[in-house]
Length: 414
Ligand code: C2O
Ligand code: CU
Image: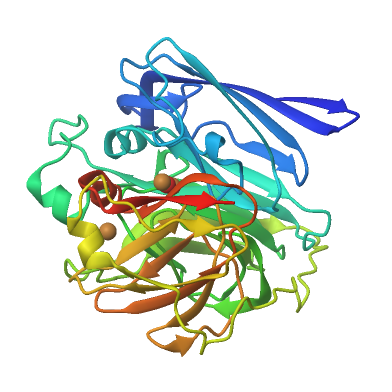
């Protein structure tokens, strides 16, 4: 990462080579991974609001690829989908260049043959900081994922019938590309954990040994006020920022996914990592009671401007198109899920607010780009198309569902 200060602001230049490498996900065991810069996760990109990010992607794989900047409000041609660019062929390069408008935990991942490319490791985190972040004693970026291996230890083949329907889940649970690692925190300190769920389809109902933590951010950055919880659901594609601690020296906590039924039976509790609490260190942390002012776009009685039937979307195939959206026209979308599974709905390029879930107003204010629509449930979202016309899309972030065609393109027109 190269930082250059120009009269127009800071420019952050990064070279990202997508290539195969031996991914040692646990000592002594490796698979053939695909990594940006030959690592999983790809390099952590860090920037400040207003910086320009310039990424040169070079494709050293033997198949085409692109980078989608998940959660970024960037110009349409930089979105990394095949609707806005020709996929980068083996041996070719492509330059992504855009300004970073929002402070948030974001991520980047391949958007071509995603079920395989993301499973093999083509993803990384992008952290953009604002001028007024809560004071914490430390920060960790933790990307959750899983890997499905065959009995002989190699990556299981892609795309069997069951995967198409239910999504791909594996038994190897990873944080930052390593199997069930040990994390550390100093006793007495409060850290900000920026969590990304990069799994193809695994839901993570996150628990830190049952201890309370505060959710301070979601997809689109800080939320209105901290929410003190003992668990939080993070679906594929989503992020949460937590204020974690303080704990006491010597404690050892399990970082687990609690049982959850997303429509294929209840999962077992599954450990992703352990947290060891080390010797005490002084704390300067100060997480305010009010984090950010978020004006509601609409109230819960607003009528929808559009209804998206997730069942029809699931069976509609790759060439579905939504009606165009005009810049400045407030969008209120009802997402209706009459299928037997939950689906994480992801909108490219714009943040939305969740207005109601099953008719009930949401109890906290936030900006999101991905929201879980539970089986037989209904979620109303609102968003405002700002002046970035072009081709955009929405899809289910269970990557096998997306690959099957649970997606639609639409145009934002001025
Ligand atoms: Cu992270 Cu099209 O998605
Ligand atoms: Cu889905």
